[in-house]
Length: 334
Image 1 (cartoon, rainbow, N blue to C red):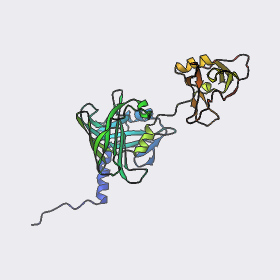
Image 2: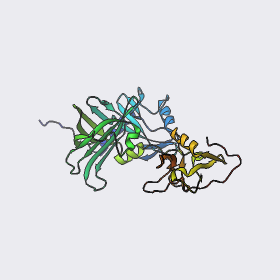
Image 3: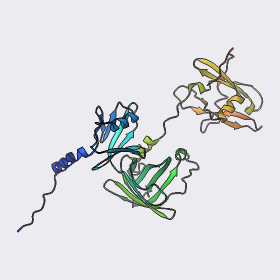
């Protein structure tokens, strides 16, 4: 008697299984349009999307609960979790529906267990085109943000360096003396069907991570980059009052600009005091160019003076502004 064996599943069978599983996952919000694989766009903003998924009658499986973790909305349904992951959008919101968890972490002294943040994973060195794994992810534990970073050696043989460390937003932009310097330890790295498994030491503990690709590393870093600083037009320096002789650090007497269509003037001492108190004044040589923020420096005589200088340029852009004309009733910038 021959033993019956199930026939191998073909593409139609897999499609049928996927269709049967669809009701166990959240669906796109009504009015959303597809913008890519698992990516949708809507006229609603991020907060409005979260509120829409939380309302009665939302397209989520019955019995679901919604929580936020690692910067994403997690829909915990009876048959599995799904991450509603937000991306950049000029208007409204862009969001992805990605099965979770996207990370699992084991170890001591770090956020552990199932995590739901975005994972950026690249399979090749973008400069050489050779196989080389890179991983980056951001985790949150309370108010503290953590950075997971792993990079395979250029030989692409499963060895590299990795770290999982608490960070401050400014740490990620301090390239000269980063607090993360020296924290990376030797790591083993293995490709999986959905992403990467890696392990490395942190102190005496071994950290093990299973990461699922949700973005490329470059796309994730772009997504996570801070929004450009919003410039206050009333804090743009547009003219300068200065003497023609004397030490360079003592020549600048005052500056001026425009607020609400009215000219304003500040003497150099007041400008310096406001900068030291945290206000952001800037020089912009022409509209559309990058701003150069004004700092306070000391000259050879020890006198403080306002300085705006581009990298690699010796000019003080404050001193190079056009001469302020006299105005009868200047206002004070807000």
